[in-house]
Length: 177
Image (tube, rainbow, N blue to C red; front, side, top):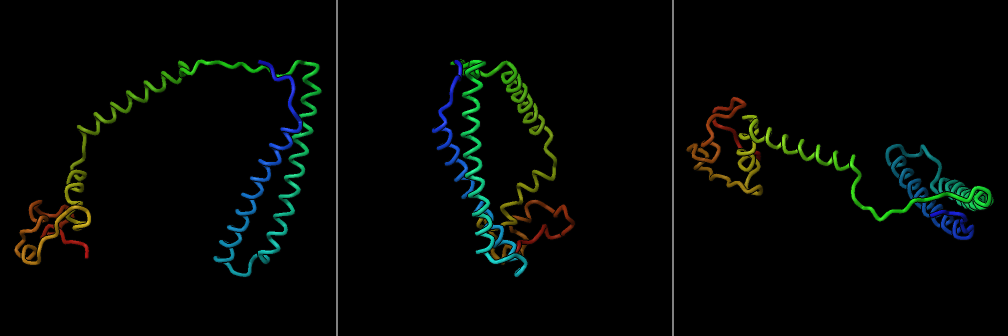
């Protein structure tokens, strides 16, 4: 397929809309940055109306010049396409991945299987203790049950079943309050 001509009107409308959208984003960004700087360091920047006036002026110039340049580029492309025939584009219905992508997916899949196999057999001892103690330390909102005061005093709480605390506390640890 060969692109031998572009419609200048369509290019002008499309570029105007895209550049206007980018301009709105730039103005909103300028206002947000002004508010942030004003919050951190008051009276450093000029008034918001001044910042808005300058940013709207710059954005208007950007939209006008960008639209003109895109339309002019379309006219120049149409002139050059008369001499060289335009740009040739190859379209295909083949949606299968490339051989390199297929190979990369296979390598990533094998690496994932090896990593999972390694992690199943090489779990550090501190990790299993940390996961087992997590509901007890966080309290009832995490699924663990909090012992009564009598159970804590008698040492019959859930923390007592795991033995001494690995951090050196003799009572097996206490709850965060």
